[in-house]
Length: 152
Image (cartoon, rainbow, N blue to C red):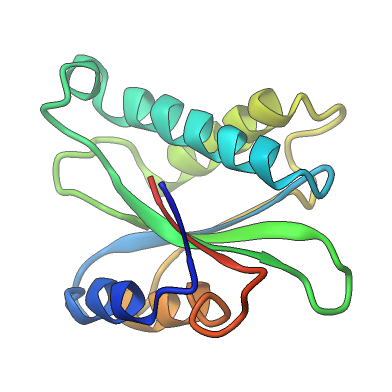
């Protein structure tokens, strides 16, 4: 679900994170600047990634990844992209390498991108400090009308 310019939601999300929580920081770039299409692709990524990480438990809605972040337009490039926080749950039995590879495959599938999955459309990293990563992911959604808070 997307929200425009909501300082209170941003403060709530960041405020409820603990510094020792584990998670991943994901940046995905759109192939074009169609925001509605991009949000749809992000939703597909979320559904497919939940299925990959939790299998049937995700389908039954017993277990889900917490994914949130900001959709923004790059100041220099003018390109649409999203910075997402994925909270890591102890129940995830996949390694960071497996998840990184799967995210790249799934994003290529969602966007119908051609070429290598190891392109510049995806940057996936383990967070060192989830609160700082969330602050960065949500930096522009606090003030910029063109940027959107996303919770999927």
